Length: 190
Image 1 (spheres, one colour):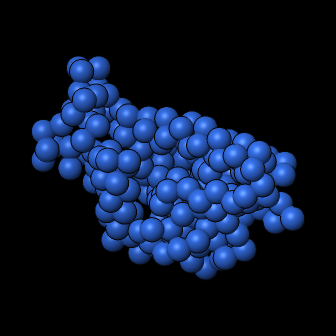
Image 2 (cartoon, rainbow, N blue to C red; image 1 turned 90 degrees about the vertical axis):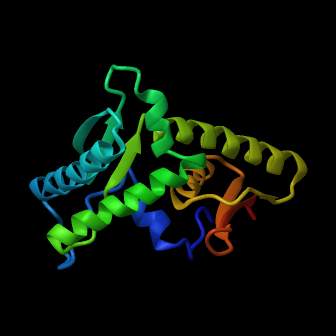
Image 3 (cartoon, one colour; image 1 turned 135 degrees about the vertical axis):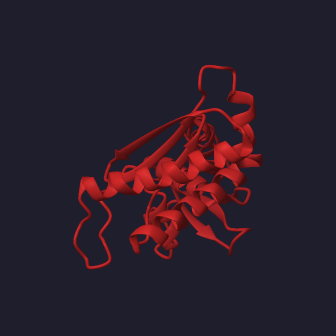
């Protein structure tokens, strides 16, 4: 079966970093220039926040796989430790900052954004950790033949786990529950 048919839109749309270009409100695709403008607006917002906090960091504005991306990286002055405060416990602060950045984009453009915000490469590191968690769960399911329920996760985290599980034979995954307790169940395929 693969991913749950009722997978919430946030997991399939908001966190699909390798997905196609997002349709605009009118159904047509946003051009790269529009997406880059969204990343510029969000970068300005994040830069203002960093100034208020007196944090140093370099900000990269990108468009990756049809999605605006803003990356905050260490400025070479040892500011990495301070930037980690912007990630928070298990990425909670990062998720909140991403939503605020999306609101800043919406305020200026009038269109919702699928902007992805990253700080210090957190998302890539977390994706690797989640891959290991998913593979471990799949091994347990194959060994014991019983479903494994993972801890509650954010939409980004669930999407990462679903992607790994969907690529493995003999197991499937689905999301269950409601935020903030939404989790993945990995079970043997029927």
